[in-house]
Amino acid sequence: MAAQESTVEGVSGRYATALFELALEAKSLDEVGSDLDGFQAMLDDSADLLRLVRSPVFSANDQNRAVRAVVDKAGIGGLASNFIGLVAKNRRLFAVSDMIRDYRKLLAAHRGEVTAEVTSAEKLSDAQVTALKAALKEKVGRDVLLDAQVDPALLGGLVVKVGSRMIDTSLRTKLNNLKIAMKEVG
Image (cartoon, rainbow, N blue to C red):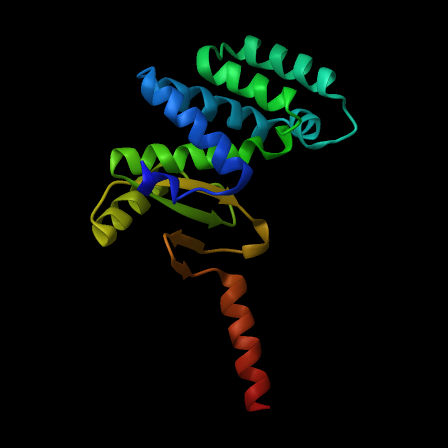
């Protein structure tokens, strides 16, 4: 477990580690992971829900009631539901996305997988995700989970982080490099 714990840190890491250990003991790692992925998808798709979990204006009771209603409606139960409720009760909802990310890291380490953080200018298609996973698996020699983000400021291309390595093929970086080179010439 020590190797897994070193992959996460801070408040989000402590919460994720506690949830991971409970899920491991209950033999429900995949179920909890799936429920957390579902909750994260709801956060990504709903500006109102995101505002609710990030805003300190809402009281702990209001956040807890609202999040409980969303979790129940989504069919999220068991450990994941209790976890999200505890996070709301403890006024830590602002960090729930980081906790979910850290849980995914722990789950990937447990499975012997590696997580690649991928940032693109537009949402990647299923075919692009499959091709990228295959290329990364060939390079790192292990199965790769993608943590995909979208940043329109990249203009195009990708930024891929695997462990401590980063590959930046974004147009923004290429244009910045060209601008620097032009300044040196002129």
